[in-house]
Length: 351
Ligand SMILES: Nc1nc2c(ncn2[C@@H]2O[C@H](COP(=O)(O)OP(=O)(O)OP(=O)(O)O)[C@@H](O)[C@H]2O)c(=O)[nH]1
Ligand SMILES: [Mg+2]
Image (cartoon, rainbow, N blue to C red):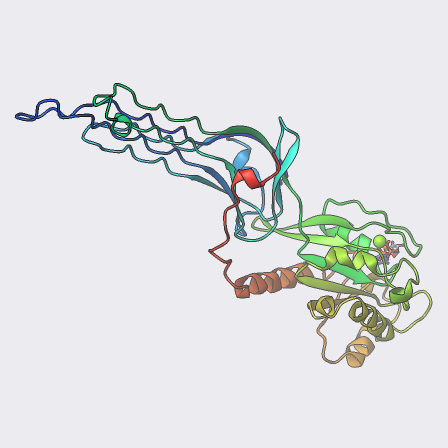
């Protein structure tokens, strides 16, 4: 099951009450006030955790409360502070306050922490209120209440893989074949006008998020076809799958088409062009020319080329497994998140 939305209630811990107490010891008459302060409550903090990829944790649990602070005690003992409740969510989680209708946080970056509800402060014990005129205050502060909010969590998918290729290469067909997404497929170039995401589910609960985008043609960098601006939608993917029509209906050469698209990617951004690329020759099921795949491999000797068919699904599973392995390697090699990422107090967020 893929859960991409959750409604929950969160509450930070209340502060503990300050204590009213007086020192009582033998030979120390009128020992004075000794009531300790209450402890602070725990904050509610959300953190973007790369090991999470669904909001499933929230499906069975509606209330998330941080610990309250303990009350102060005699002998100037402060109450213990409550622990913060740190809630891990997948990267790309948006947090909305459903009562105020505002976006509180966008947890896109690995390790980002945001304090969503501030804890209550502990109250001061009566020790603090001793003055020259009131040596025995019978007053201590109560703790303040921890903030609470009703939240809607929404998981905005961030694609792992971008599908690029010429119009009609079969990008949308491939996305339909591997996911529940239903992009339009027509035997006509420029069918896809808007990027579309789909989730491929692999055995063992593994998921790959793929982005299908419009086709690219020669001169797209100068505005030909649909241009190249939509490539920004795959700028943050880790891998691109470059799909080639093995039997283009205009009888163009797949290897030439490959180079054309590479040129357009490079023109858009060297960063995008330098992403890990997997090349797949599509429409194998047509089997028009049994030598076509070998010719393509000869023409692009540095590339491992997957032979697939989005229609018959041949070769699709090995392709997905390779993508998965590559993603895993790339995740593994990523630098650790900066632990110094400051937690944003909720005050600095829109409220
Ligand atoms: N025989 C065969 N036809 C395919 C295959 N994949 C796609 N097609 C056909 O190729 C045509 C274009 O497929 P699409 O999936 O729409 O291609 P696209 O790359 O998304 O095209 P744009 O959105 O225009 O960029 C359709 O008629 C598909 O049925 C395949 O593996 N085998
Ligand atoms: Mg398409």
